[in-house]
Image (cartoon, rainbow, N blue to C red; front, side, top):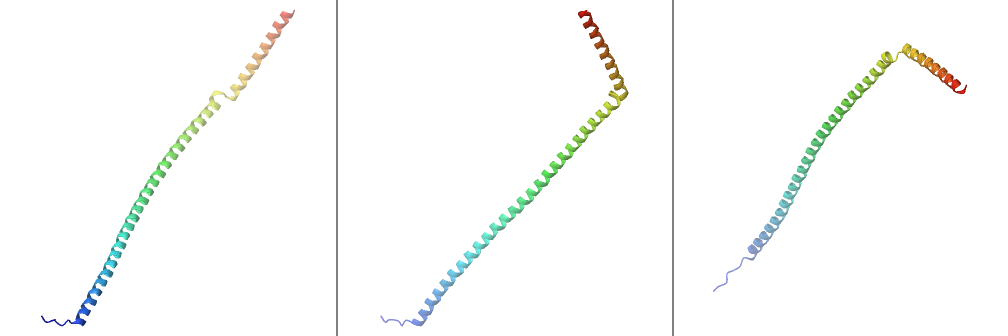
Length: 132
């Protein structure tokens, strides 16, 4: 059988073309893998950023609600304190005006002094009787 002539330059060009095609395929594959990996990483980052922003909004809303509750409690305490203070002042005013008036107090003090003098005199008389 006769040997066919091999076209070496064509064979060489096809081999180089195949090798270049393989190298380009590998490079494109690596590039696509890197790009998809970067996109996936960016999606994860964006997801975490969205979650963080959602948490910030939730925390801010909770902080506002907490501050509002504290303000309500402070207002209630102020009202209670003002009411107690008003009752205390009203009681003092009533006591000063009605319970012990200055004139009544002077009269009572004079009566007590007179009673004490009478008691002292009575005690001295009793003591003198026992001794005498």
